[in-house]
Length: 282
Image (cartoon, rainbow, N blue to C red):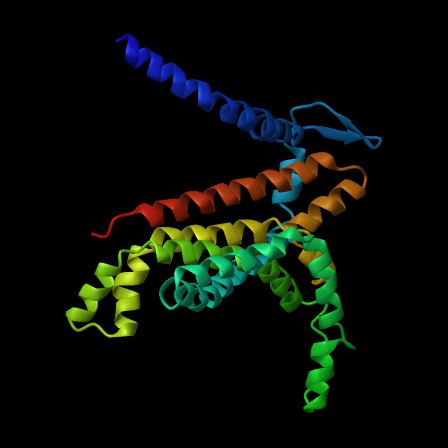
């Protein structure tokens, strides 16, 4: 009995720092932001209250829902593109190269995270501008000049710059953990390479693939840098609407409404993704 109690105390002792961290830096700020969404702004100053004016204003505003659908659509497109483009690379790293090459490849995929994301986005500004590299190449073959800057395409490129290396890393780790005997058994039973991928490899790595896509969606949905510097902020995404709300009349409560809606959306997407990832095939 004493041993069991000691083990429970030891387990809770090491869990406590994580619980305190989540409480102080996630639950408490989130709760304060939710409470602030009911406050009012009078004479450019926030006044504590419990009014639904901000929620009624934002949820009844067509511009808000247009921005919501635009933000969700861009994040979804970036997630699909990142997942599809990353899979061949992850497949090759997991099954076509030796362990040393895979480790070096993963190391080089981590290197972009050593540099500022803002710096990488500024570099894309030079490439995507009307007088940039891509436009010059298209003009050379008679298809330009073409500017991808301040467009939805530029925003998606920025999202891929942010999330694509992470998606490749997560997919590679997931694919590399598959038992090779399953693939050999599929080949022995007459499955071709393509059928093996869809019938064996993808189902076996389903959890990792969905988690990688989820991380991409979360990063893209809440990103501010790419839609502002590469997308031109028109139409605005939700993150840009938060900045605009705080600048126009110090409407922090309305910005809190937008932030709460974004968090609830991400929680719903995360819950649905995790449920799908761990759902057993019938």
